[in-house]
Image 1: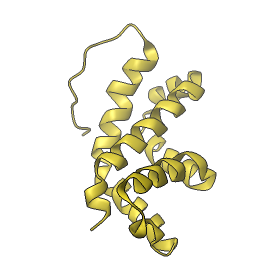
Image 2: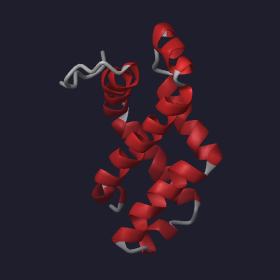
Image 3: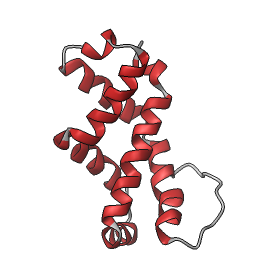
Image 4: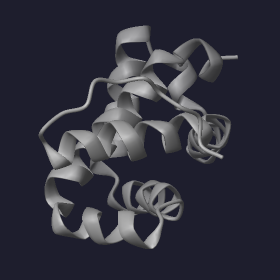
Length: 118
């Protein structure tokens, strides 16, 4: 059901998890993640739209990384798509994989800035 993303296998369990699990889930849930971020902007009175492009990119990063309630909400949306085996692997490497998940999510949102500013 997840989209296939072609990557080179790695000897790193963490990197394989990122490429085989996190990236496909983020791609699959892309429209939902954009809608969630647009709602996040809307609830904050749309100040995002008054910022320069550089400031908007920073706003995305800051919101996803520093707003703990929002960050945990997004983590839950993604981890809700894990299989039990993936969840167990995630827990074994939680700190590193959470960092990777958040960085991938920020990159995904930032790369689609034009869709957020409509």
